[in-house]
Image 1 (cartoon, rainbow, N blue to C red):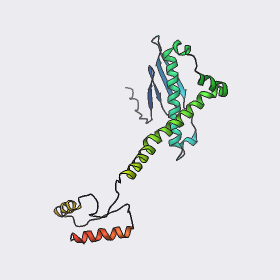
Image 2: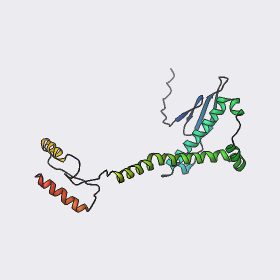
Image 3: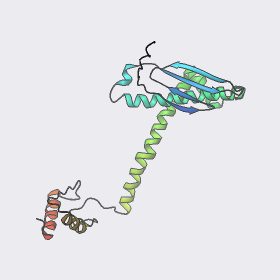
Image 4: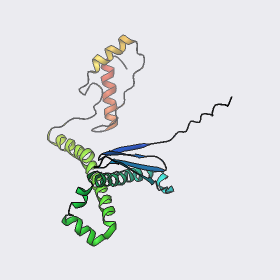
Length: 202
């Protein structure tokens, strides 16, 4: 009897995205696009992933991977639209902006537009999800003070109920941390100590 073939487990990383009438899958060395054309035929295209050592550098690899994902995703979407729409895609006349980009930048115009679109997308995301909420909270705090960190028994937390629960649970040691102070941190510490003394804890 022949010996059974030895099973080899190989770990790899594969991802992908949906495109028009198909799918794109990407691995460490290759990426493939499969799209159904109007005639019902499934067209597949296989491409190499360019290996660039600098993309693995710390602090660079995250940004490089993000930009590469945006560019590859946009490229595959456009290619899938071209295959899925067939002659309808080719018959579409370029707009004024497309003609201007082609006139001034030639074949590199499409890549330039993709890079600019990716950069604007990152800026828009940072503005909407980071800068805008921060500015909104800062403006609201100016109109309606939201408060901040307070010494023990001075804020809106029910410290007395917390201390009661600690006694019932048999807690022997309590630690208080105040990250920020509105005034002198030592004065805040002294006030917390006096308040704890009034509760018989110090």
